Image 1: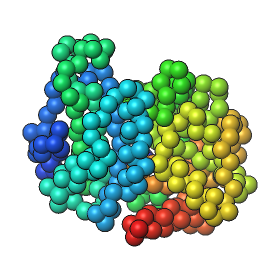
Image 2: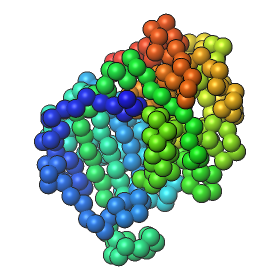
Image 3: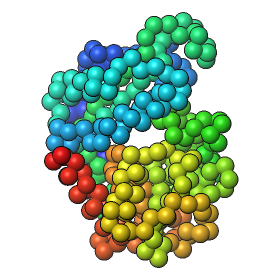
Image 4: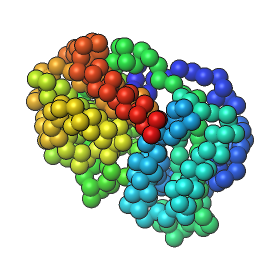
Amino acid sequence: MSSHSYIKNDENKNIFININGNLYHRKEAKISVFDSGFLLGDGVWEGIRLHNSKLIYIEDHLDRLFQSAQGISLDIPFSKDEIKEEIFKVLSKNSMNDDVHIRLIITRGNKITPYQNPNANEGPINFVIIPEFKKTDPNTYKKGIIIGRVPIIRPAENILSTHYNTLSKLNCILASIEANKLGFDEGIMNDPLGNISTCNSTNLFFIKNNKIITSKGKYCLNGVTRKKAIQICNENDIICEEKDFLFEDIIDCDEAFVTGTFAGIIPVSQIEETKLKSTNLSSMVSKIRTLYNKKIQEYLLS
């Protein structure tokens, strides 16, 4: 089980992918070996959900995409509306309207030679849109996930801002590898000061004495679902504290959950050796997940 467990769908064998405005069957979808993203992880990306023919929180995702691009001095020569048009073009080609996950990728483009300096780039950026029929495995919510500490920490801002959603994901990949070695679904990562920051692919919340605790957000991705979870707490008189804290402060917590675009609010059933009651139907996690799903429905009707 993981925060990204999904139900296999054979329809994905025949999807079309949008590459620079052209649509290709997945078997024919190719990009140059000189692409900056392939060579160096030089680019930005977003994961977006489609439900009932509507792109969920697309405004937030595109805002973060452009902020990330600006943060790495990558000029996106398209408007947000033009990007949405390209997304819907490939969705239409695939006859997709519900339970779809979209990976939107923009790289700095092709290089003349495999060298890191952008001066070695030629031509325009590359953009790729990969839509898949992808529904969360319901066991994710029934069983929850197991998380635990890993030695890999989040980088300081003067190394690489964790608020930029870039293709350079090695920091999180290494944390994921360590988590798997230790038998965890997700790894708990500290910030450079030793405080708990995030998990390797999701944002992290703990519940203790009916209070929700999460990091200040300085060293974690500014998650769209994280933001919505905090809003839900504020709108429903649920205390949510964004603060610095250590693992020792939450090892005796009652519940925990992680957040992400793909699966929304995901219960944590176990922190290392400690079992939690997050998957109980009467849990606060269950309440927050219900409120989150309600917020999604309101968005669909807006």
